[in-house]
Every structure is written in structure tokens, then in C-alpha cells.
Length: 374
Image (tube, rainbow, N blue to C red; front, side, top):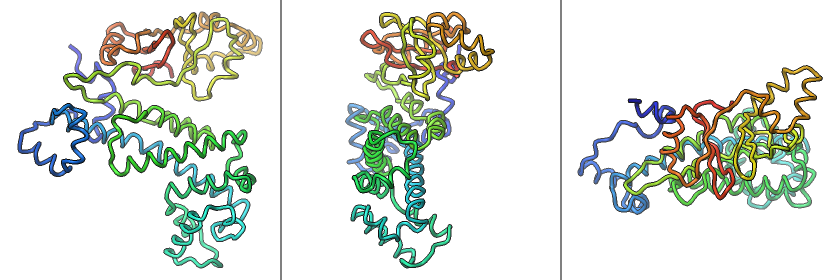
């Protein structure tokens, strides 16, 4: 008989998070004391979701804490990467003390200028002084996330186009800047919810939040985006949702989207050219039915290790042909509406490490058990 940790491997990942996986012996007096400490108003959100079950409501509160903790890493990286990019770009155009420069301030929204004045006064920094690196770094770090979002919105106006080009040299066009501006503001608002301990366990698409954070970072630095995506634990945290009597977690709700679908007759070279650089696997689909799963790492290793002639042959192959030339990766396609726990148990019993969620005749997500596609 396998232990719970063997049956559900992500349990081991979270043993050091907000909740111990050893059952907590709730008794009436403790339960009442916890609810009073949290406040009845705050606890009521969880009690409602638990349909009046007080123990399950407490478990949902802990689940919310795990989600918040998981979200803070990509959100903090968005803030740090964004503010550093803006600082570097503005410093290159207006000097390291750009926040004192009248020409730079003309581009900033009034709220940003007022915030700068307040912070520089608090640091006793005069307009004419040249700040040392430590003091300058402190000023940059003191400005809140929303300041940088406001600065970005201000620079997105026509007059700030040249400054934006200095800040985000990798941005392909104005559409990238528009995406960056919109998503940064959205993530700033969501971060405020997280740090104020608001419920995020329902009514929020956390998979999309994770994806939006990666998109923002990628526009600034693709390598950092890949690093953050690799270490983000949002998807793992989502899968730790406690189950109640009526709780049900569909496979499609926890499956990740870091794959691309292609057709059997698509050429390898064309698929590589248009696929997202952070894609982990290619799903070859025939009439909506997945027929092959190709880990990107396996495909690229095969191409990189081939000589020039063999490399050209591999790139010219169709996806169906390359599937036969690579080591086979087993997978299981299951309905997206199936219970996640049941899907994992079924796959593990059959020795399969990758589950594809199929919804309305198309692959809608991928679940990797252990490291099956890296």
C-alpha cells in the first residue's frame, strides 16, 4: 500500500508551507478561538465556501495562505524586474538622478512626481545633490509597485515613446508596451489583494495570473522569465485545495498550459519557429485526438547532437516522422471534467507520468507527474 506522499508527489513540496499535513485536532474551544482571532467577518468568506462546515472553512483559510505565498514570488519578480528596467532606461536618458531631472518629470504623471517629492524629502535628498549608489538604491526600492505602474502609464503616452524604447529595448512594438502596461497594472492590483490577506482561493484565475507575470517579465528579459516560470509554485499550490464532502476539482482546472499543439504533417522547422520559447512539450494532435507527445528538451537535444546532414533531415521531417525517431514519451488523455485526484491515481497505477486534459474535443492542459518532459 503506497503512502499518501507516494500517491500524490506534490504533497512533499509543501510540507514547509503554511499548513502541516498532519491533521490538526480541532476541538470546539480551539475552533471558536481561531474564528474570533481571525474575526467573524473575515472567516465568513471561508465558512460560506465550506457550506457551513467550520473545520473545512479553516482548511480553506490555510489553502488561501498557501496560494498567497506561491503568488508572491512571481509578483515580486514582476515588480523588481519592471522597476529596474524603468530605472535603467530613464537613467540612460536623463542621468542617474533622473527623478530630480525637470525634463524627466515632464513625462511623469502628477501622482508620480508627488510621490517622488515625498520620498526624496523623507530621505532628506535635495534636488541639486548627487546621491551615492546606496541612497539612490534605497530611493528606488522605497517606491511602491503602483508608482512604477503609474510611471509606465505616463511614459506610454506619445511624449514618452523614446524613453520607453530605452527602458524596454526587447519590446517588439507598441503592442508589447500596451500589453506590459495593462498587465503590470492588473498584477499590482492583485498584489494588493494578496498582501492585505484577501481571499483569492475562488473567483480568481491564478493560472492566468501566473501566465501574466511571466509575460511581463519576458518582455523585459526572456531568460529571467524562464527562471521564474521554472520555480513558480502556483500550479502546485492550486492542487493542494482541501476536499470537502461536496468538493470536486476537475482535471482541467489544475492542468498547466505550457505546451503547444501541432498537426502530424507540420514540418519540424516551422513548429520550432512559431512555438512559444517557454513551451515544455509539443502535442501532436490528429482530429483533436492527441497521438504523440514530444518533450521540447528531447527534441532539441536530438537536433543539437546531430551532424549537419542529419540536422537538416530532422528539421525537414513532419511531426509524425520525428515522433518515430525520438524516444517515446507515454501519456494518457483523459476528460477535463474528470476528478484530478482520480486522474492522477489512474495514471500512476499505469506507470504514466504525463496526463493530457481533453475538453470539448481539444487538449486543454497538461499535468506532469515528476519530471517527465524536462
